[in-house]
Structures are given as structure tokens and as C-alpha cells.
Image 1 (tube, rainbow over the protein chains, first blue to last red):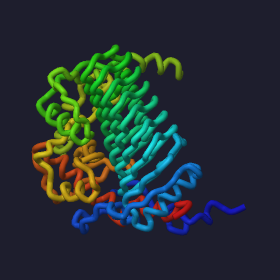
Image 2: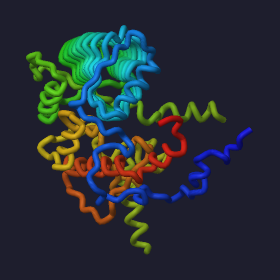
Image 3: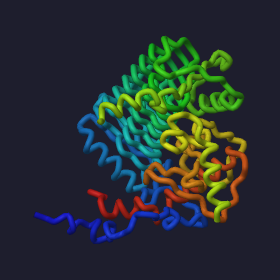
Length: 280
Length: 130
């Protein structure tokens, strides 16, 4: 049986270093030359375009194929006949133009960091789950848990979305052109959600931080979600963001409501003594 | 020496307000506005170039990046290493949070895209395929 000490990480000396008191400045020189891409990422050209027919491919082979094409420098990839298959286009950590002609199943374009994705159809549950950066535009509707645990980037659905959109989100912006279901922004910790239509009950339930903007009617607010005051900066940012989202609707921003966290769930002052009793 | 300790304790106490904070002896929550939206009039040339290179229309994921503090020093949080990157000590920071945040965004890009980033070493050690 191979010993753990034979692992490459030991050979690289990763387990010998003293971590206490170590500062990240050791790795970092702010005078370093301009570099806008991750080290070892693929150099792609948006003008180099290719197509993939997904009808006979499963998700693993398709995702590998996308990676191989990026290695060859293709910057625009069109997926034909996606057939609502699950987990398509996941884990793309590169600059890329991905055009999907059709619909996606569950967990489409999850864990992406950088690409611009356009989907002409609908998407199933948990689209763009754990997205880090980039832009995803969906022309039709989306299922539940849209943008679950998203960390960054712009996630746009021009139609309506199901329940629990932006659940546990820690950054980024989710923009919904239509209506949103119950528990939108459930336990969100940071980031922004914009809903142009109506939203169901328990909006922003147990949210710790972040901001939700609603253009239509709110079913009800969840625990610790309260109404905030819209500022000039909010107005200008909203106008700008909807342009980025390619939403052409005429919108009266004066009717918008801003929902933020009441921050009453932050400290657990009253819970603490009970918890202590239980522990003793 | 005595004077220094006095000042330190004063600074710490001024942040402590709630009963929970008093109980644990430290401040809870952020010391800067994590929900502050970026003012695009203050975009730096470096950030404009970055947006252009990525093919985006705005700051995208960098909208969530702000200049925070670690151990009393200005620092920016890197989600990829789950840790703070302290700003170089010689760097003079502007008073306005919007301007400070733009600098934080520049620092973070330079740090993340550097071949010396800790994840580059980790990837070499743990990657399963190319």
C-alpha cells in the first residue's frame, strides 16, 4: 500500500512549511507585470468558433471535449441538440463564449469561473450552482435553486424562476426578468438579487447579508428580512445592471423595493445560555 | 510602552457595543460596508483593461470585492485561498471607500493571476488530470 508520504505534495515540500505567522505577501509582488488570466489557463480567441453536436455525447465526454477545444484556442463554442441533459458545461475555469442552442437539465454550467454563456431554451434545477465569475443569460424559464451558492458573476434569467433562487449565495448578481418562487434568497450571505416581476412567500428568509431588489409584489418577507432605503447609487447601478442583463423592458425604478437583512440572527444573544446549558 | 497598550485597549473598546460583543471581548461583523455597490466613475485604467480582456461589460465578480482589514492592517479577501491578502505596507490608501475598493480589486487580480499564487503549487501537487 502506497504511503501518504510518497504523495507528490510531500515531494514538493508542502508538509514541511511552518504555517503560523506566514503572510501572503511572500507570494505577492504588486509590481508584477500585467496579467489578466489565471496561471496555466488556456489562451483562447473569441473569433475562433466551432460547433459540437451533443445528441450522442454524455456530460463527461462533452465537458472533456470543451476543454480540449479551449486547449486548441477556440474561444466560441456552440452546443447543438443539448437535449436537456444534466451537468453540461460545468467546471469551465476560463474565458470562453459558450452558446447553447436548446435547453439544459439539472446542474447546467455549474462551478464556472469566467465564461459568457448564452442559453436559448430553459434550464432545470440548480443552474450555475457555485458559479464564481462570468455571465450566464437564459432566454426562457429556470427551475428551482437557480444560482444556488453562487459566489460571483452575473446570472440572468429573462423568464421566471422556481423556488429557492439564490439559496446560500455568497456573492454575484442574480437577475430575474419574470416572477420568482417561494424562499428566494433563502439564507443568502452576500450578493444581490433583482426580480422585475412578483415574488412568492418568505423572501430573503434567514438572510445574513446581501440585497434583494423587487419590482413587483412580494408574497411575504421571511425571518429577519426587512425593507431598506433605495439610494441614488442603487438606482444608477440597477439601470446599468439591466443593460448588462440585456433586458429591454421599460422599468420604473421608483416602484422598486429594497430588501436587506435585519441582522437579528447574527449574534444569538438569547440562544447562547440555553446552548450552554445543553452542552454542560 | 504603557501608552501604547492604553491606546490599543481604547481602540478595541470603541468597537464593542452589544452584550454579546462584551461577553466575547471582540467586535462582531464587518468594519466596512460589504454591500456597497461600485461607483463606475472611479474605475481605474487597470480594471477597465481587465474587463475588456475578459469580454465582460462591468466589474462582474469584482463587484463583491472590498478593502477590508486583518489584524488592523488593510487587506483584501481572496476566496480562492480562503484568506486575507494584506496590502503592501508602503501603499498609501485613499480615504474614500469606493477608491480603496478599486485598489483592492487591482491587488486581488494581481495576486490571483500571479504564477506565485499558492493555488499554483497546490494544483501541481494534487491535480488529477491536465
